[in-house]
Image 1 (cartoon, rainbow, N blue to C red):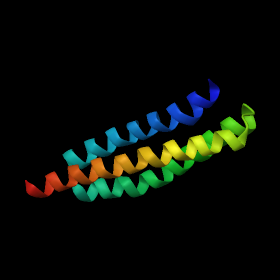
Image 2: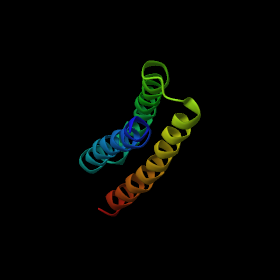
Image 3: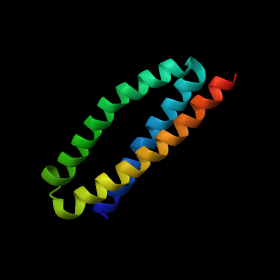
Length: 96
């Protein structure tokens, strides 16, 4: 259960939050601010990944051979989905 919560749900939830904020900024402030948030989001996502790695491996004691591949896979997949969704929102902003 811990592997599922931290390795699957945590990266999905964090990227959904980031996606929501990114869409809000892109739609309300424009594409330039959206790209700026994406750049700053790189730092926040990196900090989140480091924190989840520390939490799972060092603090809770999960097996890193199972936990890290789960965490990175779901983090990467949701990151790709986020990129396509934000890109679509930016293309819609250009048409206005």
